[in-house]
Length: 112
Length: 121
Image (cartoon, rainbow over all chains, first blue to last red; front, side):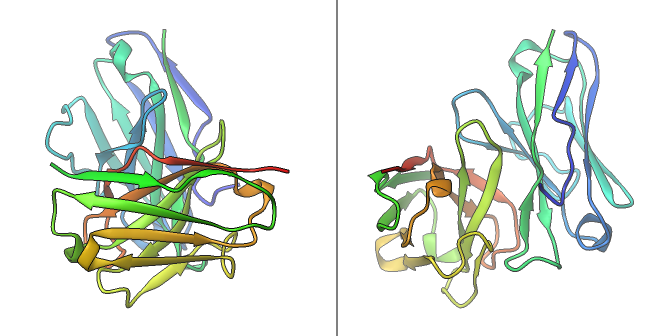
């Protein structure tokens, strides 16, 4: 059970907008630690999608965006495409844990 | 181009040891912290261990503390994970990941393809 809670699954039709939440607490997201998002396509290694809540690495389409509100963060995907079907993970830091780096449990995105 | 190539995985009996390696190229290795992240079959990502650029700061997940040891050789552009007293629950694909900072406080901006560790009798 991760200290960062994500919905196990979300779905949307091509062209739609979906959001994935990452809910934390006062010892992680609420404490002001950065949140990063990773995309893991089937059978591949994770890839950095969003860093520092809202920043996109070079090459990541602007259909992907991140935000923060209180002790939660969200990933939004607009103009959904079939190739967006993947697992998505949030990652942050937690002051209550030794080592302190934590991942959310992951969210499987299905494109209908 | 950044490349991270893990090796050393395999089938091992419970209680035995294994040493993973990660060969890095395409960036100045000793400028960045490095991490090991694992993924059990069908499960999510789990951070395992981190090491800063100069090995001065090291961290472990509680699940591996006291059994695993992370190290790096900056002269060889290599990262290692010595895994002792392996348990069935350590079975996973182990990824090597680069940090965006010298201290282990940034994001994992590049990942290897992983090496599979299977612990079974």
